[in-house]
Every structure is written in C-alpha cells, then in structure tokens.
Length: 293
Image (cartoon, rainbow, N blue to C red; front, side, top):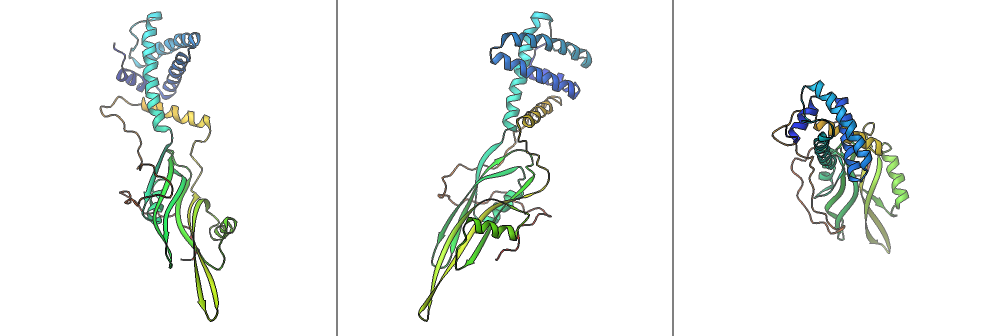
C-alpha cells in the first residue's frame, strides 16, 4: 500500500480522538528527534510507534504498514513526515496574523473592530490637518494582530474632544476618561491640539480644543486567548487532530484570512475606502457615553 496523505488521513480519522492525539504526538516527537540528530531517541520512538500502529490497525480494520520490524521503519518515517508537514500548515493557521488597515473615519474603524472579536490593536495612527477654525481628520490606520480566537475583549475607537482654556495632559485625560467611562480601558490614543485667540475690548482669550482619538476595550467574558506556551501547544495539537478527524476532502481547507493592507509609514497615511461588508456594532455593546459632542 502506498503511504500517502489520503491513506494516513483516513487511518487517523477512524481512530478515537484520544488514540489519534497520542499517535500524532508520537509522530511529531520522532520527527523532531530526527531533525535534531537524536538517533537513539528516534529509533526507540519508531519501535514504540510501530507497536501502537499495529494495535490501531486491528481496531480500525485498516492496515497502513505493509511490513513489520526493521523494514517497516521506512513507512513509519514517511508517516512522521506527513504528520509533520500537516503540523506546519496548521501552525501557520494557528499562529497570530499581523496586519494593517486604513479607514476614512473613526466610525468605520470602530465598526470594523466590532465585527472582528479575534483582533487586538497594536498601534493607532491618524492623519489630520488644521486650519483657523478646526482640525480635520483624513484617515485612521490600525495595526492589529488576529489571534484566530476570541480575545475576551471588544475593542473600539472613538473621537472625543475637550474644549476650554487649558489643555489636558496624559494624567488628566485618563482621569477624565475614568470618570466618564469607568467600565472601559484605554489602550492607546493620539491627540491633536487646536488653539484660537479671541480679541475684544482690550483683552484676549485663548481657547483650546483637543481631540483624543482613542482605542479602548471592554471585557466581554473570560479571555480565550492562549497566552501561555502550554495553552498554545494544547490548542495547536487540537487543531492538528481536527485536521485528521474526517475523511480526506477533495477541496483543501483554506487558511483563515483577514483583510490586510500594505504596511504604511506612520503619519503618511493615504485615505483608503472602507472594507466591504463593514457591519454595525452588535446589539448589547454600547460605545462610551457621557462625553461632550
């Protein structure tokens, strides 16, 4: 019997999940020892794997090793190679994906984040210009990481501005935000400052307008995002097992995708059209309120 990926996939699909996970782990360990040049560990692992495969053949009624003993080692090495190649494909899908996307307005960026609960925001850039009257926003750019699983937070973007005589520094703005939106957390912000001088009757008044373009997040539940190395390994093995859990399909699975734009330099953002399919913020999740319009 020719040992190819379809044969291997069919064999593993007929095994209970616990047996499948154990054999897949053994295959990865043997291949790792082969790559690292650990010959003795590899040979011992192959002997153990052969016994496990023979026992599994009797349970599934499907034989994938044409020979036994030393002559079966070639087929076993082919088996570990197939599993390792699928593992590398799965790892690319499970590993976080970094990207960058640009919007023409804060509202579009906010709606996009609401529609992507697997995303965390890494950086925020804005492109603005000022005249005598006001500050105008031209584009908002987000650098993000897509983790492929819910992060346990809902991210959003808002534009809040303050108006008065004195400008607010970082500490004052965070205190101001905390009073207005105690259940939200500031992740980052970019601010702009616009000042006007009003003259009248021998006196003048300096008026200050500040815009705070703010990325925030709200807890939506227990974080599912795998932070520890152990949790990441468990999720990776589960994905690998899932790949072998069904009979081979004629159409291969497509890797997870998320809209990605070409990286741009900060502060030189060209306006881009909003991504197709932008959705409104889900019901039950409100933007921060209590700020001046």
